[in-house]
Image 1 (cartoon, rainbow, N blue to C red):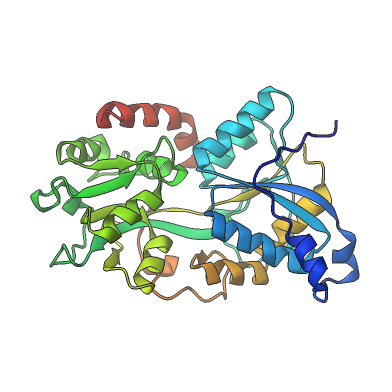
Image 2 (cartoon, rainbow, N blue to C red):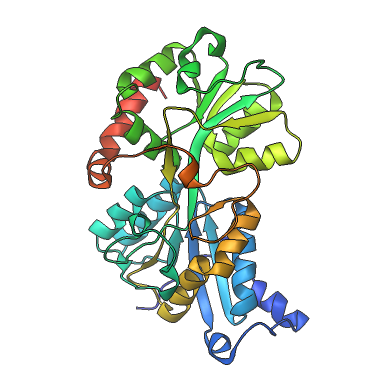
Length: 337
């Protein structure tokens, strides 16, 4: 059945490039891949647009439509489409492996063994090749250097008196990264649900996404933030009075996996898109946006650490999938969100 294409944010990069006559990078095989491709993602608009533009330099005949929102809203849209029997997405790139395990469990993903996965650790690739990690995104501690004299090195600072009413974090009800963080940290010694209860008692503010956290800390409205690393590194490089800290206890890490939907109308273009994101060129483009690449041999952006340079807080993905909704409900009860 031919899928209905929604009219939302549409990127006609291929048309623009064609108008400029910029098809020099496309080989005969690449130029033969064409048609439309629906790309659902939780990446910031600017990053998603740049990724698609780079893809279109190699595949100018593929018109990519982007739907962008927070991970939870992206997944809600897909689930609604699935219930209606008409999933419109061809390719999806959102927060974490737990989210993709849910889609895999529902048999919504197309297995595809990409040759471009070489150089990516097996721990970041689904053994059945229904999804691949695309980058390393750590959740770190952000500190406003105008408001804080002594830079902390522990998550404990968020429950301290000095952080009372001065800390902020994203909501696991909206952010996939935040949902993953809560699932992991609530199961770790030294944290547990007691840690989140203490955050509540200490006046922790909860906002929808990581962008809101960054804005509040960079402006000085809040002094401390629990937030993904790359947006903090960007802000610091642009002159914001903000420092990023990888706390000594370790940090949760997500990989923003990418996968192809089982009912894709354009399998050839979808596979080409996945290949591009995992390729050396795609990883270099991702690093230029400020993300830590997941593929070996690609330089890490300034201000960020390689995954081998910090301790990782993690937990069994299958258990996190089984308990995700309960975890979110538990957090909601604690935070009164």
